[in-house]
Length: 185
Image 1 (cartoon, rainbow, N blue to C red):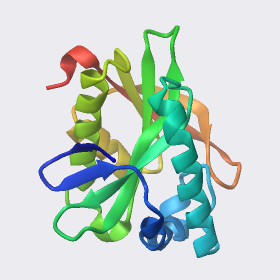
Image 2: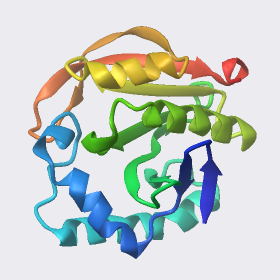
Image 3: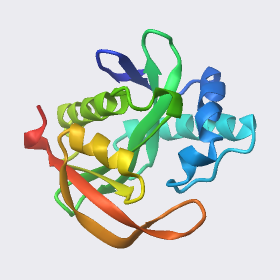
Image 4: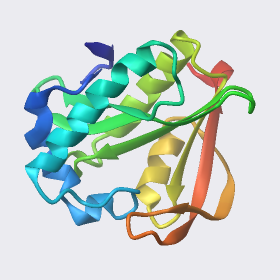
């Protein structure tokens, strides 16, 4: 099932056939070094993740926004999954705020794909009335992720000292960005 599409991308649910594409980038230590999960050790890790996401989709569809969920980012022209984007947090009593997380295959970074996917996700959130505020954060060492947030139109709100952790359980400072739903174009 497709969630939304942009000019060059299709954002959709994961399929079993996507395991190789997911493993290609999720097994790269450089890709995962700022994330909470370690690099995948085998194709089975990708298969398990896809199975887990497919089990979470029904909870999300039933309105459980607390469910951490992500979707495949497929490049339309090739049919290849080049990354993922999804929801990593939701706060009902904080102005209905949802947090977005994302990851991109390094072979496809620097081409505007993630900015395109992120702007599309903003429109999805607004169109489905999921939240009033959309947030994202990144380890301050991951400057490329911050540039994506800026290009997508998010506003820098500050640095949370030791406000995140990575897959080595190291605490790190994180930059926080947000966009209000009324600012989404």
